[in-house]
Each structure stands twice: as structure tokens, then as C-alpha cells.
Amino acid sequence: MSGKYDLIIVGGGISGASLLYATAKFTDIESIALLEKEAEISAINSHHTNNSQTLHFGDIETNYTLEKAEKVKEGAEMLAGYLEHYDLDRELHAKRNKMVLAVGDEEVAQLESRYDEEGFGDLFPKLEAIGREEIAELEPKVVEGRDPSDELLALRTPDGYVVDYGEVAKSMVEQANEETNVDVFTATEVTDITETYDGFTLDTARGKFDCEVAVVAAGSHSLQIAKDMGYGEDKVLLPIAGSFFLAENFLNGKVYTLQMKKLPFAAVHGDADVHDPSITRFGPTAKLVPTLERGRLSTVEDFIDVFGFNPAALASYGNILADRILFPYVVRNLAYDVPEVGPKSFLPHVQKVVPSATLDDIERAEGYGGVRPQIVDTKRKSLDMGEAKIVGDDIIFNITPSPGASTSVKNAMQDAQTVVECFDDEYTFDEVAFRADTIDQFPRAEVELSAEAEADTKAESSAD
Image (cartoon, rainbow, N blue to C red; front, side, top):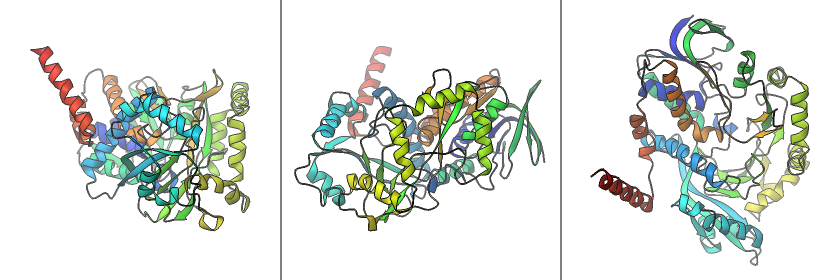
């Protein structure tokens, strides 16, 4: 099997599927192929058991700055709009209440400042500050058994989208497959990409594929492929494996705890599973692992290939892990996977959300959790907290666009614009139609609609 295409996308997770949907339906590119190494679309990190199922808007993520939240907000609204448009029966997602919980005077003051003074209340019109009684109405177990003298405050929003990103990816591939110019190949692992005089040749077990433009959206493997082609030499990966603990019927929606601004990892939170709300998941934990895929020893060699064990990489790891906040965090997380010790060590995090929880209520979730690659900049010897994208000559490498799946649709829009530019204006991308299909479908608060109407009126007046 072989083929020649204008555009080839490598990787069938939510990132690759989003770009396939964007380019197949909203550009006039004549031929597009998606190559996925697994037998099914979205079988690895996008699978619903391997991630936190959260659509991050930046509203309750307290390690986000206002600037980052503004960027993430648009991306989340695009994906939410897609869900509102194409998943009316809510087979791909559920919509529940979502809150970030502050316990004690210090945390409450921090959350109040964030909402009022830092501008998050203005940026997110649906976000509201609620006290103990309202928290108890929404999430009884969050208040049940808690010391009455504990000061409580939560920022709550109805936009608690719980998402099965794997099924969303499949939906997007189905949407794209309605177009006659699209081919999708599963069980087709790309082993090498070679630059040619008019594009690229991709070697696979099924033969060679040729294209003018390529986008590699293969998660951790994107950097591996990039380095093989001479890109990304100043970057390595810090692979973090996330795990979860399970309980029954604890929460109705999502309850986050306050996050450390210096850490790129989500704080422990509890949420009801997207497909079975009787299951409450607590996590994720964050354990450093020398592998690119959870539970696959074959990818240890891939990690070594990406890491390189050169002085710059080793010095960067040393600098990062010596941090007085990050190092204790990594050490604590190692304990959570140890039998008997793990649940006891993790229980206080659960009790921060559900005070009445006991050891008998939680169990480690077997088969849950994936690897979230964090990008390390070896020049600055630090974690790269931004979007991890490498743009080369007619090729793009998406590694882990922050915050991952939540911004996949916005990332696809930006990549679609870049892709058509690679063809020297031979093709076009219809951003207006793309937005109409996604973000324009997102339900807004009345105050947002009023503000938009006022802005439109001012614009019309200016035009007159």
C-alpha cells in the first residue's frame, strides 16, 4: 500500500483528528491522509481512561495566569462548541457543575483575590463565588463531616464539560471521512520521514507515502521524529505518568483544589466519570517515568532516543529536579503507586475534597492513566510551560500543546492556517465557517451576549 497526498497527518489522537476535521471540511486541499500506528483511532493518551476527562477553560485552574486563561478560554470554547453542535445526545461528553474549592482563611483569601482583583470573574461571566451552603447543595460530601469552623469558598461554573476525548477524536475522523478527498489508515506506523525535493516520503510497514506538507501529531513521539529530522535539538522530554484512585458516588461534578502556580501539573481533584457518574475519580498523581507510553516497555528505548543523555539534557534534568517545590512533589508522588503505602499517602488529598473519606472508600484504579510529556528547554534548563510546537519547512510537529486536548481545536485552526500557507496560496482555509461550526455553537452567559451586542453596535456606528 502506498499513496501520494497533498497533506499527511501522522497521529490519530485528539490533536491529529482535530486537524483532519479542520482541513478536510474547511480547506480546499485536494488530498489528505491520516496515518495512525494503532489499530484504532485515539487508543493511547486520548482514550478516556488515560486522562482527566476535563475540558480546561482556565476558570478554575489556579496555576494559570490571566493571560494564559484568556488563550485557553477560546480553545476550550471551540471544542465545547463542537460538542454542542455534534453531540446533542451527549454520548461523547457530559456537562456538570465544576468548582475550585478553597479551605481555610489563607486559601479563601487567595481565591477571593483571584476572582475579584486578578480579573477572573470578569473574564468568565458564568463563574460565581459560592459559600458553604451553596457548596453543600451542589456537592453534599464536600461539606459533610467537615469542621464547621473551616472557612469555605468555591468558584463554581456550569461549564463543567467532562469529555471522552477518544470518542471525540473518532467523531472528528468520521466527519472528515464524509469528504471524498480523505483517506484514513490505521495500524500504519510511521518509521521514518525523509525530506525530498518536492515534499516528504513517509516509510511505514504498509509501504511508502508521499506528501507535499506533513503534520506530526504523535504525542511524545513527535519530538522523537522531529529530532531524527534535525529539529528540536534544544528540547527533551520529562515524561510524567498520571494515575487515579476510584471511589463510589462521592461527587456529582468536578471539584478541584488550589494548584501551585509553579507546577505544570494539575492539583488533585475529584470528578464523576464521563460514562458512569457513580464512579468518582481522584487524581491525577504525577510520577516521573522513563517511557513515552504507559505500560509499554518498548517505548523506553524511544525515551532514551529522545533524551540523548547529553550534558545539556542531564544538566536540565538536574536543574529542574533540584527545585525545592518540584523535587518534594515528585518524591511524594512516587509513593502513591506503592501497595498499602500508596492509598494511605494519597488519602489526605481525597479528604481535602471529601472529608469523610476513609481508606476503605478508595482503591487504586488499575488500567487508568497515561503519560503526559512535559517539554524541557535545554538552553534555559527549565520546563517549557507553553505550547510545544515545532514548525519546520512544510512540516509541523505537535508534541503536547498546552493544555493538551482542551485546545486541540484551536490548535488545529492555527495549524490549518499554517498548512495552507505552505502551499503558497494554492489552497484556502475558511476560518469563518470553521468558527461557525465550533465556537459559535458555545452557549454564552447573558452578560457575554450583551457585551457582544454592544460591541457590534459600536462597530456598526463606527462604520456609519
